[in-house]
Image (cartoon, rainbow, N blue to C red; front, side):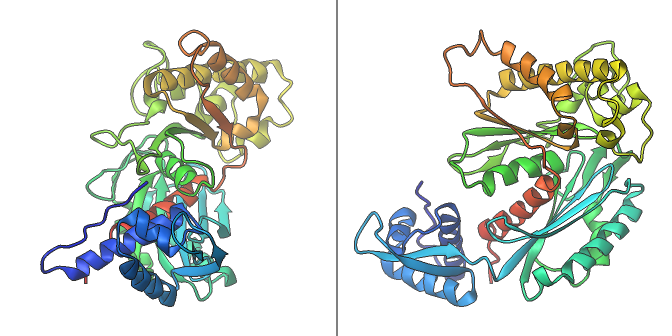
Length: 399
């Protein structure tokens, strides 16, 4: 990939410098170990300009040098990497059943984390609880001495594109909540970039942005929790989320699977969430809130009513995966969220349904790569932290 920063902009050398700086940092992030000569080739900057900028980034603690290696052009050069020891990114997830937080490095390595399984209540009380946990996290030795670049918060519903507002969280009963405006006054010393993102979209972003594998053409992250959501992330040529005109792309939990089905928390009938979601399974089996679903079912997986409920939910999930695949044709599907811990009782019917319905339309095509993340507790929070880094690298502050 070739990045093309502006090489000249009359009367605005500061802006030019910031663009070139962003281009170099992004290229080192995507190709760790790259040399100065290859940076000049990929960014189309002069070797002198790259050398000066790299030296400045080394002195500022953004980059570190590794050993000598042969690049694609010229003489051997020193390998360049993002500095894992200087900065930190904060990510948090506001879930229906609790709060999850991470502090991580520029490459996504989690330095410290915390999860509190207490159901969220009002926006104000949740902001207070999250602020308290963030203050505790910041006091931990793993983050001591690091510069905090900002905070990303993932929430269980669509977010307005023009302002950091949670539009609607049906499973919390929240609507039009400016959550960051509630949170910021409680953390006056925490600077950097702040952002609000839908939890499934944040997870999809992190799965691509922090991946050490080749970037997928189109990744769909399916979030299976109290509700059901998805995030769609294009990996090439520049990683970015598919949002839709109102930020509603990926709200698969509220796609209709039964025209005259049960009423959903969103107010419609027959939504996917009425068939496969944490709250639907709880309702079908009479499991009270406050008890983790996987814990409640651990000793009951052989019960006929549990098996029938999970079989039906799994088939509905398979239908949902099939519809998503036929609509967007992703190269990769990642399934995460608390419901994955129910294991084969839920997932096997889903995968069987999905595979059966791929045989005809996609008989001659490469099969979709499907991954199940059974330990996905911190994926949305980590993805929100990844978005903070993206903002830092791609939205330079003009002096």
